Length: 332
Image (tube, rainbow, N blue to C red; front, side, top):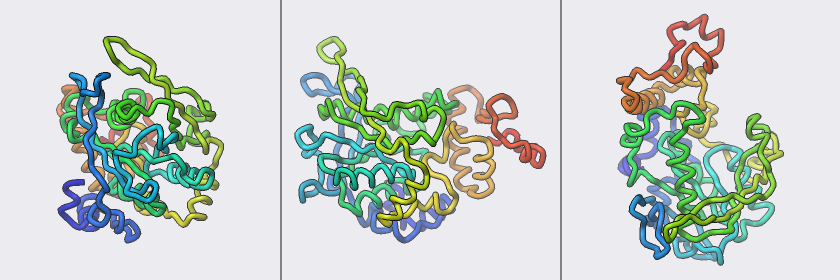
């Protein structure tokens, strides 16, 4: 967000990404809503509390209120909280948050969002928009101060398939685990917004509260670090999600409103039709994906020639588009 701070966010997003920032997000930009506190957290610590040899720095930013005072690092403890609401910019994530408000009034809970550089623009602003209407405690993690995106791409390459998404591990899974362990939040429950209707794989998940074993290294050996996970809106449908958002007058994010997408604009889960549409509907966004792809391709020695989706097995480029635009059988 450093570059965005130097410019009008409206002008920046329109010039770089081709989307006009809708006015309802303006109060939630860094210019209008700076964090209560910014802190640095080590990714791993020794029993003494000192960072381990392989530890790296993770930036934390805090928003909202807790017990009538600005929410900050000093409030993070098991004495104060027993629930974490894991959120991002998707409608089902908003529904998870609003369900928490309705069912538990947000008591003893705070929200955690892990920033991913491959996301659509103003992801953080939208998350602040729907949480800070309630002045809800919010923490955002960011690993970019220690792990610049370019260096990660050169080291790990393009995240080729959904099963080899190093980006998910580096930007989302690892920061969450580190946050729990560093702040000794053992026994806390993480509530996730996954729904059975989203995919066949998610339909197989267990929605009930269950143990999530993690491991912590101390004194030369590993010990279990127990937390819990649950899926409170697992059986919801899209209509349920939209209904709760309408009831609380929470609007969808600008990317959903403009082009119908959310999450990461550069992702191996996206199919070939998506990149075809992105290239023609939002060439500025496609150009950014192209830059990331070329940097990451160097790790495989492809000199920027790496193609994610081809006509072969795994491609979901529609037959109609193949017939009409054979030049886009290999899109990237």
